[in-house]
Amino acid sequence: MLRRIDLRASGAPAEPDALASVLPRAEFDVEAAVEAVRPICSDIAQHGVHALRKYAEKFDHVVPPSFRVPADALDKALHDLDPQLRRAFEISIERRRLVSRAELGDHQVDVDVASGARVSQRMTPVDRVGLYVPGGVAPLASTVIMNVVPAQVAGVGSLALASTPQREFGGLPHPSILALCALLGVDEVYAVGGSQAVPMFAYGVPGLCPKVNMITGPGNIYTVAAKRLVKGLVGIDSEAGPTEIAILADDSAVPAFVAADLISQSEHDPAAASVLITDSETLVAAVEDELKLQVAQARHAARIEASLTGQQSGVVLVDDLDAGIAVADAYAAEHLEIQTRDAAAVSTKINNAGAIFLGSWSPVSLGDYSAGSTHVLPTAGCACHSSGLNVKSYLKAVHVIDYSEDALAEIADSVVTFAEAEDLPSHGRAISIRQERTR
Ligand SMILES: NC(=O)c1ccc[n+]([C@@H]2O[C@H](COP(=O)([O-])OP(=O)(O)OC[C@H]3O[C@@H](n4cnc5c(N)ncnc54)[C@H](O)[C@@H]3O)[C@@H](O)[C@H]2O)c1
Ligand SMILES: N[C@H](CO)Cc1c[nH]c[nH+]1
Ligand SMILES: [Zn+2]
Image 1: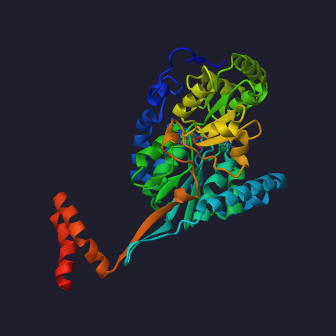
Image 2: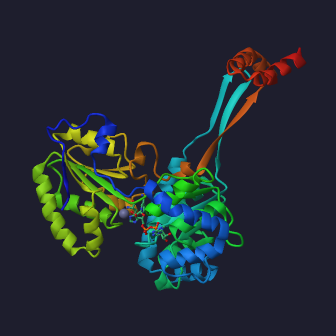
Image 3: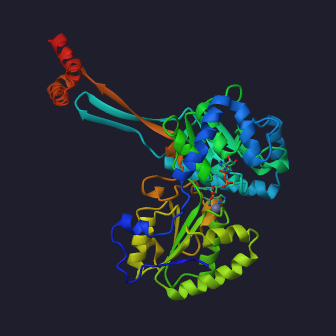
């Protein structure tokens, strides 16, 4: 089922870039999708609600009676929430909040670089954030938690949240998403799908949604492309697109677990990527057998099969564990599972991954819902430069500079020299004028 990329004894490229270029990746990438969403973004910027209606009809096949979800719909969703599901939500919130508070840490910086010369750093939250929760393929209620909890812990003052309108629910987002918003105290909720919600948040829509300063949350390739387009006008978190799982495994891995974990992430999207990296032919054969059995029993078999057989998925065969580590690092997976002997030790050799799951008992699905970690993670190789969504994503570092007259005098010549070297003498003058005044 999985295509094979055999790097054994072939002198696999040593440089990470060259190695990455022979690994499985999607053909239709974010850059390609940018051209599809560019006109949508400018249409919404110019024509607001009118354009939102047009694209809701086209992509979501329902036009909500009101794009802003009424307060009573939020209350009703929470009231009607199944108690067992509510308990699962609460556990997930509790764990994500515990970890978020720890992420906040103690970031007070006050440094006296010389006598009377102090540089401090204050962390300030982004004022207003637009959060996106995917709902096109499946209603990802857990993504409400992954967005809202760290934003609240960071102290973001104004939170707006959007998710796809659902025909089945009269154009409202899925009730489980609304219930979680109510549970977490988010009352500004929109029934707007990803490639429309991003420009709505970025430009603002008069009479509906005030502009935000930052947009976070995952989505399909179009949602991610829209975020790339508006980046700069607003802040964005990492590009968290179609899900990826890479599993680095040796012959100690349990084939049924490996297959189940590959399938679990393929369930998200025909464009999702599932990659097995191993030096064991025996494991590959056993995983293939398991895939056949397990895919046949899966509710979303067609979607899973499309993902597993797509060119973004595959088995990468390597000579040994060290070669596997190099492949995993070059691939920079959103999720990397390590199912080898001494997985913890192996993980210390990995630099590039959105999140790392150790051993047989920490599958990605656990992280998706209830581990306490984030599930909004960088995809398409972005894990080599970006982090998953966390409390710090919503904070800005502001340096505060406080020098006394004597401390400035002490460094004045140095600054003037530096300014001259850059041919910016007026910069130097702003220093020397102060020295003249005080003489
Ligand atoms: N990386 C992460 O952290 C992470 C987390 C959760 C989910 N995901 C991914 O999120 C995605 C969820 O899929 P979804 O479809 O439900 O996402 P979604 O909610 O982002 O997409 C639905 C929206 O896509 C837009 N759209 C659809 N077709 C379009 C087209 N042809 N042109 C322009 N826009 C179009 C519309 O706005 C539609 O409302 C999956 O790919 C999943 O793997 C990623
Ligand atoms: N695996 C997804 C992150 O890529 C997150 C998710 C939400 N629900 C289920 N899974
Ligand atoms: Zn998932």
